[in-house]
Length: 247
Image (tube, helix red, strand yellow):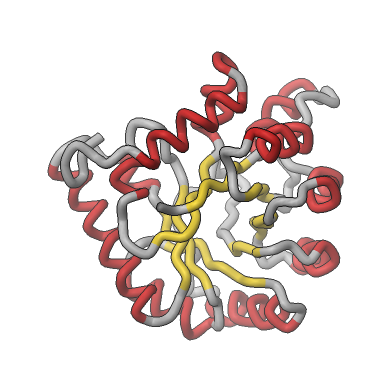
């Protein structure tokens, strides 16, 4: 059973909508840790600082005893901050300023040299590096060549697919990528778009270590509170799917 990491980005999204000092993603991280339902905290510090801020990641790293997964681009200034904070894991992700949310995995054809150089820089400081990739063998192979020790499989296409054959096809791609990565000695994480309705089949895939989930949990927490929303997600992760690829 994979571990659950809570992504607190969208607590900051609500805060930034009004430019208020609340809700605080650091407080959410602390509360999540106290709930006993998460194994770690994830936050993505974007170059445009549209939600999570430098202060947020500094305080998460300072106040949280759980492992911290710092998501970032290859932007040198943010890489510098990551090195300063020395999180348990750094996950390199693609960024486009016009996107609403991350739309896919890293382009390791066009950006290989830059990614590989960033992986080397972080790894030299003892930071575990994961690459956020599409679930295809070519991306897994490129991640291995770039020097990463982990990959995070993008589950967005699986989540967006209609239930039935289309979703089963995406689940098969995730399974194949996970098995291929494991065979190359890479640790395997996954995330993006997962909800209590669709997480079960993904959590049941072989070799998964961590699931990074944020938006669905924060949205549910509006109605039931964060600890209960986390409990529901853990329960959904632990419930066997009704059938392969089912909702």
